[in-house]
Structure formats: C-alpha cells, structure tokens
Image 1: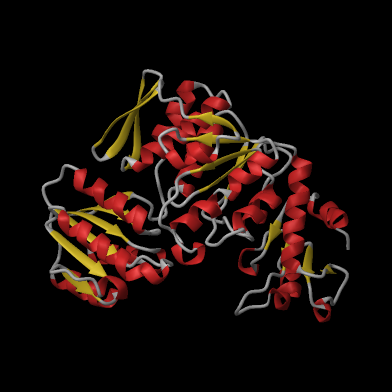
Image 2 (image 1 turned 180 degrees about the vertical axis):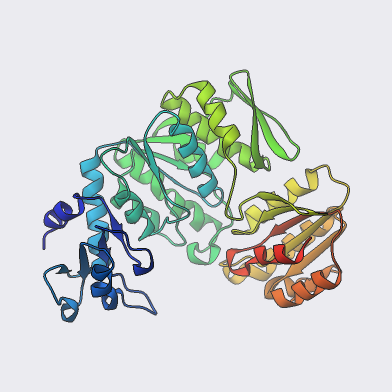
Length: 419
C-alpha cells in the first residue's frame, strides 16, 4: 500500500499507536520490532481492542483486510510522519543539545500555548521513533509544532531533520553528554550542529544564545534571532531563578542559573511569535518541573532537590555549583554514576568527585561502580542497595539534599527512605 493510501486512513482520526497496552479507539497500530519483541505478534490483538488497522512487515501476520503489509514498519512510520508534516504546513521548531532539552521544550510550549494551539514532544520521545510519533500527534488544528530531537551518535540529528523539516532550530548547549557514541566533545559539537547544517541548507532560522561562543560561531551563515540581552536580565537564584524581562520581574519555579538560559530561550521565541509580554510572564511563572527534573520535594524533616532524570559531566558540574550557591545551613549531596561516557568514564567521575568534595557540604554520598572507583575519603557505595541500607541506618534530619544521577541509577527510589 502506498503512503498516500495509508495517510487517507490515518487522516480520519489522526491517531497512531505502537503499544497494545495503551491502544486508543480508531487508531492505526504500527507493529514495531525491538531486540526482545516483535510487534507483528500483536497485530490482531490491537484490532480486537480498538485499533482500526494494524501495519505489519511479515506476511504471515496479514490475516485479514484490516492488517496492512508493508516492507518495513518503522520506515513506513517515519515516511508517514514526514508526509503528514508536509500536509500540516505549519511552523515547526526543533531543538536539541546536551542538557536542558526537555525543560526548554516545555517552557517554549508553555509560552507559545498562551497564544497558539501547540503540539510538542511528550516527555522525551525524541529519537527515530519518538520524533515521528510527535509529528503524527499533530492535527490540522495545530498551529505550531515543537519537536525535541535527541542523539547519541553522528548523523542522527541530520536524519531527524529530514523527517520533521524544521523551520526554526535551537541548540541548548554543547556539553559532555553521550561522549561514547559521539567520540568526544568535538563529536558532540559536530553531531548537534547537524541541526544548523539543515537550517543553513534550507534557509531557515536559528535562535541563538549570544553568550554561547560555539552557537555564535556556528550560526554565522544562518539567518539567526539572538536573545535580546537588553531586555533580559538575570537577577538571582535562591533557590529559584528570578529575572527581569522588559522591566517585568519574573519569579520562576526552576532552580539553577543554567535554567535562566532555558527561560531566556522560551522568552526569545515567544517574543519572536509576538506572544503578549504579560502572557509570557504568566507562562514562565506557572511552569513547574516534573519527572525527577530539578524538583524540590518537601518531606517532614528534610528538603530534597531531586534531579535524577539524567546526568553527564556537564550537567553534574552545573548541579553541584548551583547547589553550593543555595543558602541553606545543612546540605547533603547524593551522586550516582554517569553513563555513556566511554573510555574517559573513570577520569570524568574522578573530576566530579574532586569538584563535589571541594564544596563545603555536610556529607557526600557517591553510588555506582564508577564512583566507587574514585579516590575520595567520602562515603562510597557500589550499588543502590548498599546506599539504601546506609540511608536507613543513618537517617537525615533537617537537611537539604541534592539527588543527582543518570536515569539508569533510578535514584528517585531514595525518596521512600527519606523522611
């Protein structure tokens, strides 16, 4: 079946699903494959629980007229998304970067939704499957699309750009993330700048932070809109970011000076699309982080800064520097391993260990096989269970606690053992 014919079926309801555990009525089920599963096995089940059609790529699963056989399900999903993007004919803003992508995306969405009907990446569905699903979640009612693009190797951003064809692009920063896949920091810069290459080749627009020398250098040949530093001013963090925009004080619910840049990006983009200044202020002040991203959690006797969604050397350094600047009497840092760093992993963990111990924290707890090998006189735990047992035997009391680590460490589990 041609992609135009599949599009006719899709455009009846603008619904696609890839997981039978969350099938919606009238959806089209795409039977994706993974290392440990074959979605083709669930084609009939998807129809039985509400899907209108299932798309498979193995003939033996085409058991009735509602099951459509294609050469490759994933490629068909991507092709359908790109075809739909062309039919939408709306501005698409794409963003990538080493840190802060999801928070920035959510801030941009919050600001733009004050004026427009927007559709943005859900959570961090930002890869070769997530980007198509994001595009296919947009309907003819959508006025602006916001697409987060993640990558851990070269040419991935380039490929995602061919699917979503962005009109605008923003790179949050270039840091020490996914060093193993990119082959070092230079590789990170090269990989992320594939977005700039697309924008330049297609005469599109980049949003640029003038304080980021790499952004400024890499966008010289691109039509760019810079943050207006004349009407944006950072005030303080204690612990939340406070700033001034066009003489208006804005009190955010975000911690860390690094989040000032994320806010500035959202304000710049909102300003570009002529969102009213009062509405921009309202959107920023009402946005609150979720999903273990810089959340402040008040317990009975302790306050927790939970930043356990992800970690790399750049974000870890920023989190520690911010935590050290917060005015609290008693502070504890609990730091978990950083993943996907590659052959420099032990070196990077040692540098973070040295940085953390240079601050005047009451206590520092390191957990994970990499931090366990660092040289330090502070507490080290090889795994989560060992850390958990220590926390239970040595309960915190009236402490301000930073919890930071890579997603795979799942350090948010500690919340159960802290009062």
